[in-house]
Image (tube, rainbow, N blue to C red; front, side, top):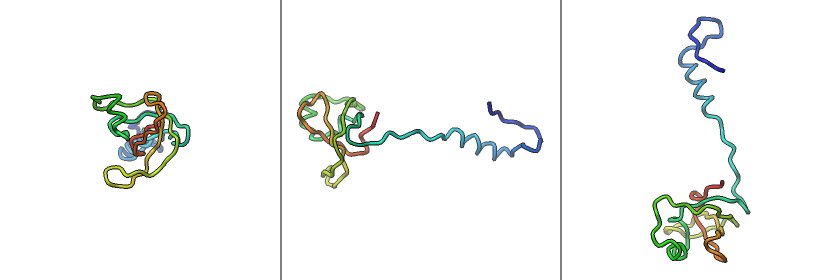
Length: 110
């Protein structure tokens, strides 16, 4: 167990060094799960396209509602909000036989 010491031994650190050291320990990197073909994740429902499909299934989408269990098929470019953006094309059990897409930033791999 690491503890903060105030002794004046030869291994003592200044308060600034100690603070930096403990901040470094708390910044452990998390292993990132890769996004690719067959990845399972969740998406924000309000950002899914084509939105007509989503609105017919969920007429009143709550803020923060996520579609869990989305299976990524591929990455492709689509025009979203007037710009060409990199999107994740996926399928979902609530929409059988329909390929949906969402911008990459809103797809969370689980």
